[in-house]
Length: 84
Image (cartoon, rainbow, N blue to C red; front, side, top):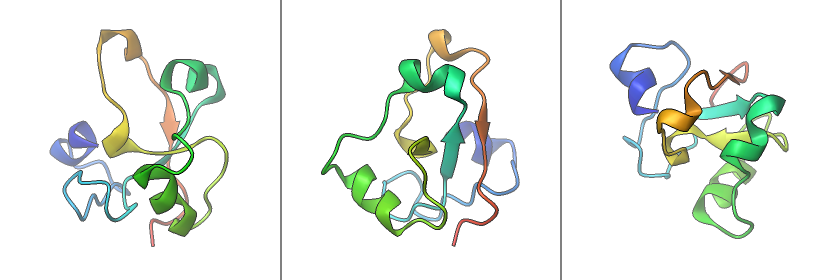
């Protein structure tokens, strides 16, 4: 999320600034990366926020909750049609 905001990636609003409180950084993780990224923990704040996100799917994540490190070099995510 921070990288997208810092580089003006359209579609990542991050209205809450990465506090997992708005779901405006919703992304779809490419299937080849799901094992590396994982899915939200059931009952977590992220899972709760995604339940309110438009067009949430099993591969949905809040980008503010993805910890970026070298092992994610080349990570592919896609954006939903809208964040609200």
